[in-house]
Length: 347
Image (tube, rainbow, N blue to C red; front, top):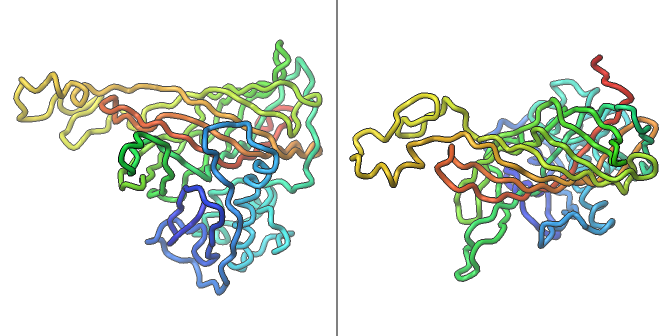
């Protein structure tokens, strides 16, 4: 994920130059918190898969898991933000404790709050899960680093293809604090059931041709499973499952002609009745819940703290404008983090 002119670009590339002065600011119109004198820091961006697949090589997975960490560490060093234990040598990003210890003034305007915690490369252990006991997964953070949308190619004759996009909404696109029970079921599968948290983000991206594509990035009602590995969870664990994708708009939303699902006109004002059949989809709003798929590949595990981190890929539909349009297929990928607890810490 490259940040150009302070606007995040979700695109595939081999090398991206990131200016620490503008990295992680929300938009090009955002107020800059300070003037940071630092040279550009170059880092390797993770290559996007040509075909949506979760069977990436271990080298590619490890590289993708640390991409944001390198950029974040460079930004922190350039900005002069002081976190205990963070230095230029720490290219893995900020840990859970370091992020939680930072106050509002340190994070304000930096975009760091929109990033997930990381684990060091040495975290290669495992977490044992006892069959018949219910554990609790908390602080699940899912951060996109790439968003591809299937649309008509700009090249004549190529048809539809997945294209890189540019984020046009603010830097609040990360799902965070998701939690739910995790256990080993009767089929000897590690099972996670999503119950609560900030489990969706409304965002809009722009295609290379200029078309805007809104979507509700979410993991609502996620049920993900994986075979037990090393007695529980290990770097070989790959949680796969489906989730619900609610409508981007709610019932009280009115379109430009005043039509809505729960309120507003039943039809476009002053249009002749003869056109109602053609305008049926626009007039009759529908709140349709669709389905998405996700794969959460574990890359690093700290058995002592219960922390796990890795990379993920998902596919889901975009916005359908309350049933009036066909939603565009969307593929997302990035990094994630979570903590496994013996029980629900809130109880």
